[in-house]
Image 1 (cartoon, rainbow over the protein chains, first blue to last red):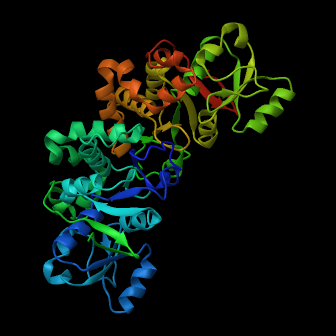
Image 2 (cartoon, rainbow over the protein chains, first blue to last red):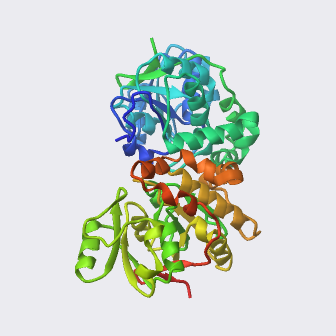
Length: 243
Length: 243
């Protein structure tokens, strides 16, 4: 339960481990998993995917594969043996996804989407669609929770810096306010990262994790703001483009 | 379980909600609750308390009062009816505490101490004893976890800024390293706060909470570094001065 009952509040939840302290059915929840799930989801919609079905467990993903779905699925950076491809945004090409329904399961991102599914609205945020998401939220009338998927219930620098970037854009509007310590910290971290985001993020643990598996080719892509206008929202157990 | 097996690691746990991701019997854990538990514990030892017995629940505190102990206890900033006094560092005067064993129970701080009690060593950190704690840790041979008590399993700006200040002091020694995102974030927040800590901390939610109850007279005191040399450690279910 949130502490701030103001309907114009912005809050930031830094880790799924803390989510029950922020959960509110009235929230618009922006799910963030910069490396790489929410960046990849934006890329997929940019390339014309029809629907993304987020599933939390490997078992669900396997069952969906058996039913004939195309499945993108990884755990800890490794593509699961039965999956068609993994979690790099570069995997979600037009050839593979245009017009299709894709099942998607990742270590942290899709679980976070499902955790937030009770909310008024769940929207997928990444640097790719930063300004588009901010503008869309400004047209809604609801409190905002920026929910960092992070990594295994810990804290992620890149997700938090994004939370600061989004909070900054929302606070440009008089409509919003924040008294949330984690939003204030995210704003300060973004202020520090903003002049050279690509350099700042080099120190992030997830960057090192991906590099150790040769999966860090997407770091620049995932930290380049405003390459996309897509607004993926959760609707009827699927992610679809906001209509 | 920690991700970094290096014995020279520094990690920061931002909230008790995330503690099980960092718990390790080998850790030296620095418990931090700047507003106000760990500041008050340092003040009490500065004023000659013999022992502090941290208890997690109100019921335990009440039982100890019935046994004749002096009890400091509050919840949400309110002194409990049976307690002798509450959680302001200004309550732990020489007259009240010198030579005594005091039972202490607070909303967040003492629970955090008890959560960490399985560790190799638990030490109480605050701005009051910042440099003293850093120097003491440098003489140990163990990984360090700075554990922010925060507020009701959330994130606290003042605890995190302190974590950054302590991490900075430890990293002055070549002995330590960090690859922990929350330590890196804490260092960046401390860098921002450091030039004028008293002003920076004005925006913290806990500061506002205390102010709303007229309990914010200790803010400056709790954010003044190096007024004390005490090293309170957890030993046999009590806090005592490190011998």
